[in-house]
Amino acid sequence: MNRTLGACVGLGSIGLLILGVQPLLYSIYVRNGLISEEQLGLLAAFEIAAIALGSAAGVRIASALSVKWVGVIGLVIFAIGNLLPETIPIMMARPLAGLGGGLLASLAALAVAAAVNVNRFTAIYLFVQAASQYAVLQWFSGVGAYESAFDIQVVFVIVALVAVSILLPFVSNTLGQTYSSDGTATQAVAPSRTGYLALVAAGLFLGGSICIWAYLGVWLEFSGIAPGKAAQMLAVCLAGQMVGTVLAGVFSKSSKFGSRIILSSLVLIFAVSGMLWIGVEDLSGWLLVILFGLSWQFIVPATTAFIEEADPARGALPYSTAANLTGAAIFPAVLGYSFAAQNMDHVLVAGMVVVFASLVVIIAIMVIRGREGDQAIERVRFQ
Image 1 (cartoon, rainbow, N blue to C red):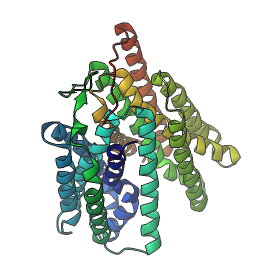
Image 2: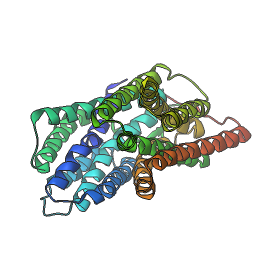
Image 3: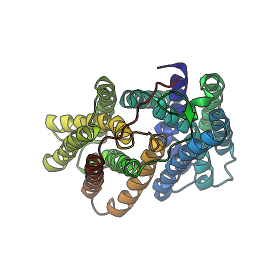
């Protein structure tokens, strides 16, 4: 992985670093009376949706101006959103910070579109995200209780400023361009019909999976699991997720990613169905929780690689992050609002239904691609 791709992994992870600290940050907002508990889901949806919007906007800015301008503009907006005084409503400040973070994340999305092995690169990116979010959460937890969210937000701005200052010079200005088979730069390619459908499938899958993950802790306690044991089960599920990203990188060289997603998603549905059907009180429950985490993160890189498989010209690939985050913003909020008050089991079932809907879209893409024939174009290694 050359310096540009490595720098983009770092910048993209910084843009999404807030996702690992949201629980801590949001609890401080509630404690300080900046927002009510009932509004937390809506705030999270707004912030993640703003990150998705920023990621899509960054792709457009890179093609119109310069990829380095994306990093500079993203840093400025991210800093403003995090440094606004507490008199500014949180519902305005957090989406603004999310927009800046999304612009930084778009650099990694552009790098995905330039990578030769999309599945492996995405797996590495996801692993760095998970590791950095886990590290920063542990650091804040170890330092001690923060009375002011502003202190945490200042740290984020400092980290982003240092990261952009160090890493942005390594990002090539040609990253936002596309290339023909002879290596000459061409105008950006618009997503194909199957490319758009693949983006929808990716958003559906991640939205359904994150809905299950987001409510898993509440569901465990709802099912009678003691809070301490529930925390341990979430920890091993997170470990399973990290193992899933590693396995995705190991088995990155493959074709027919649609078939891989379908088979692995059936394993995910089996794991969640097993938790609902037989419970999680004994060893089998621990194994099912781990299997869910492993299968979920094993599939996510494959959904990005499938976007390339569905749209060989890679017109849709730069929008993969935006599609994933849009699903992550919409479905946990909507499904939680619709079903959590009735029965927590219904939330997990609804998440599985959304995952299954993504499989239906993937099968439709495979049928369309089969009828159109393989029209893949030769790709050149990004320099």
